[in-house]
Amino acid sequence: MSTILWQGRPIPFHPGESLASALIRAGVLILGQAPTGQPRAVFCGIGQCQGCLVRVGGRLVEACLTPCRTGMDVFPEDGEHDV
Image (cartoon, rainbow, N blue to C red; front, side, top):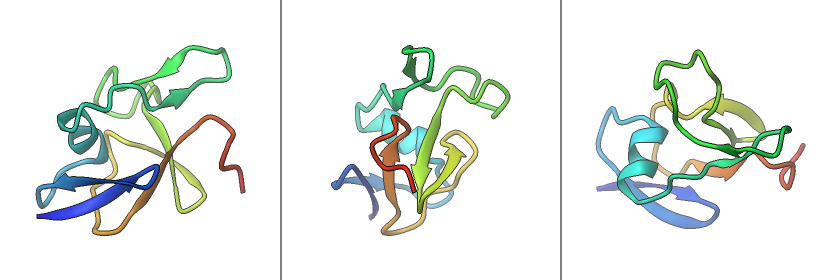
């Protein structure tokens, strides 16, 4: 099985699986912190709410819409990894 890296921790994924799905399956439910201070998490699952924003390659992406690729480095969107 292939893996992504969540803050350096390997997370397995199935082909075609979204970041959100792989992270939830691995028990990762909090994806960072919104500017309002609320935790980021998957809410709508279709990219409308942007509650699941994470950082991949220095870019913000919706975890629910982004397919996993082997070796992706994924970080919470909390300002720690700003480019």
